[in-house]
Amino acid sequence: MSASHKVTLINCVVADFDPLRSNSMEHRATASKREIAFIDQGVDDLATLLAGIRADVEPILLSNDEAAPRQMARAVEGRNGLETIHVIAHGRSGEVSFGAGKLSGETIREHADDLAQLGRAAVKQ
Image (cartoon, rainbow, N blue to C red; front, side):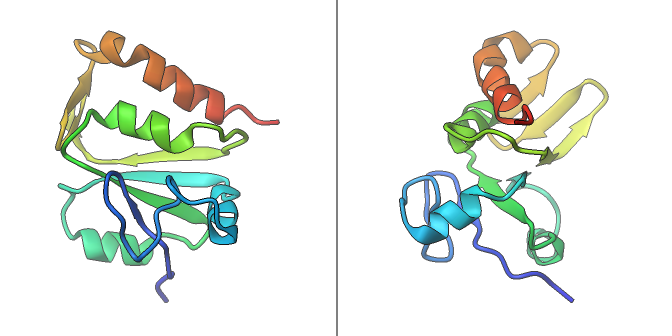
């Protein structure tokens, strides 16, 4: 059985709803989810992946236009108490590859503030 989701695409609206830009009741319900899955658009068989994500996980598709850590930090801004932050992308030893660039030991310092924002959102209350 597949789960039904409202999927957020950074910098674009998907499924007629973008929780990053809405104050609706639906946004508050989505924002109350305790798990987020950040998904690079370049992963194989994206439709099947999205269909298989549990209903209690908020899927957020990352754009290729901006560094992934910046997008992730913006998505969790103002949130706290996230139990799990999933990142689904391609990679290799020492590197996570996103459509907008890689995150590696060589690039991690330039994303330190954004990664710290993710850490703050994941701190349990």
